[in-house]
Amino acid sequence: MLALGYAGWIFADSGDNLSGYAWSENIGWISFNSTNTGGGTNYGVNVLGTGVLEGYAWSEHIGWISFQETTGCPGGGSCNAVFDGAGAVTGWAKALVAPGVSGGWDGWIHLYNDSDGDGIVNTDTNSDYGVTVSGCNWSGYAWGSDVIGWIHFSGTDYGVAGDSGSPACVGGTTEEPTPEPTPEPTPEPTPEPTPEPTPEPTPTTIQCSDGVDNDGDTLIDFDGGVTAGVPTPTEPDPGCINADDTDETDPPPDTLDVILSATFDSGFAPHSTALSADMSGGSGTINYSFWWDCDNSTNDFDEVNKSTSEGGCGILTAPLSGSCTETPDVGYKCDGVTADPQSTISHTYTIADTYSAKVIVQRGTAISAQDQVTITVNPPPSYFSLIKSNDIEVLLTLPDPDESSRTTINVVPTNFTQNITLSMVSISPSIPGAVPHFSDSELSLEGASYQTSEFWLTVPAETLTNPPNACGCYQITIRGTSADGNITDDEVILLNARAIEPEFREI
Image (cartoon, rainbow, N blue to C red; front, side, top):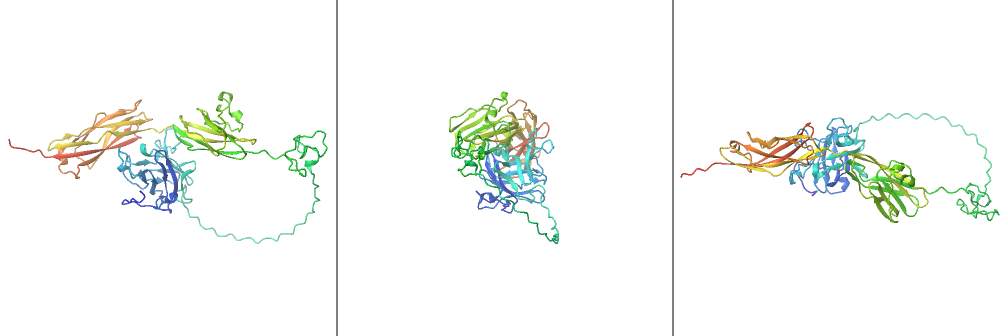
């Protein structure tokens, strides 16, 4: 598929200043530069000095995604994808395969939706979303309708990033003047140091055969004090390597380290993610104890593994040795396993909130370790979609007007309760005098899983005597607009219109 060519396409190469991957739960990885994949075709996405994006990203499932579209996006106006240099990426991208897909998907991907204009997205209580930039790291979300869904621009072990110092980073590029070198001062002569007298060496004491508890652990010498004639010998002191050892101090206890990560540490409710713990230190089999939400930072398992009424984070069910088990709504536990790192099953956070996932690892006699990771679950986005049941047609007998066949417009809300208004915004090519009809142009979505309205068109015959194209094909754009005017969705209906002259026969 990489070998396909289209007029007007400009492929890029490793000279572009964006690279890395974004992730869609519907279509998988999206590569922003051919240097990611090592493929034979050069491509990439580039941020110009003006902030405008150009070039193409690649998905193995839907093909090319253009970042240089200028017209035709939902809502009209400029469609350019633009980085403002301060942290926001606005405008649209487009999956170029969309015109060949059934079901009316237009391929547009919205990069930024700040409905209240407060500049806060992805964490806002009104479900605004968008692509943002911090330094050279790109993050946040874009929305590609039901086909692509949410596109994550960063996550654990992946992300999209700009080249350091390029226009793809906050601050862009600035040429700094080369400073004149500061002349080196002439060094003062260094005075000769006065020699210090050499101290007498401290005599060495052999502590591991002197019959004394030198480190205060109640244990004596390499052999428990037998050789030194201690009246009541003890167990050998673990700090003694041999009888000639000069330091009886016990070695420090073995310690563990652990790093906890989440497959996706943020998203919209309901948000599903899995945890993974990567540990080091100690020897022997490992116990992993995961809690889905626990703000207690101690590494003491017994303190954490108590009911919430007792000040703990919930009691985990203990699995058989060498296995793992889930405790619903509490967490996941593995005992006596050898896996490192160890992952949990996927857990779904259904309520928008900020959670602190936690793990404690235990291994042998080593001191246990803990780590936590923040999971941010945002309120689900609020929107609606228009879906047609079929295209329409009309066959006119000149010179009379006639009505087209009918189609049903289904309005499907997602966390959306406002009323919407249906309207026809365009016919292409135009049909002067055409009159649109809706069985119900005002629809209430409060408490409804969907609403419907029939649509048809009255077509004047005289406007079709010289059709603008051979097939008599027209595109009608129907738009739904929310009551507050902030949310819209379009659906395109195809009209097949023909006009014929009447036949007169002598009787």
